[in-house]
Length: 135
Image 1 (cartoon, helix red, strand yellow):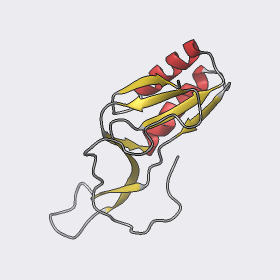
Image 2 (tube, one colour; image 1 turned 45 degrees about the vertical axis):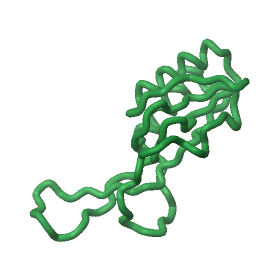
Image 3 (cartoon, helix red, strand yellow; image 1 turned 180 degrees about the horizontal axis):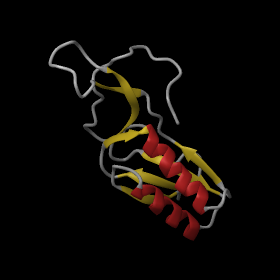
């Protein structure tokens, strides 16, 4: 799974999802892309799940680019802990996705295969998505 090797701060404040994407909002590498239409946090497990379903559908043909990375740690406290006692330990990592971000890109497959693979990947993600094609 994806996780950063080193962090500047171990327990930062919660990442903000407001606004629209100002970077990462165009197709840079492939011919087809999966674009987020709503904002949210995408967990490292969800990114890996979507990547696996796309790879399996295209039978390891073509090329897939992951355009997001889970940099932000999310902390969690134990279920039996009382109030107080500080912030919990880092539990998992999330990627902050705003409306307009390109999540995945794909090239080297037919448009029918790409559409179906991206649709299957979109079902695995907690944000709404749509398929876009490079002009």
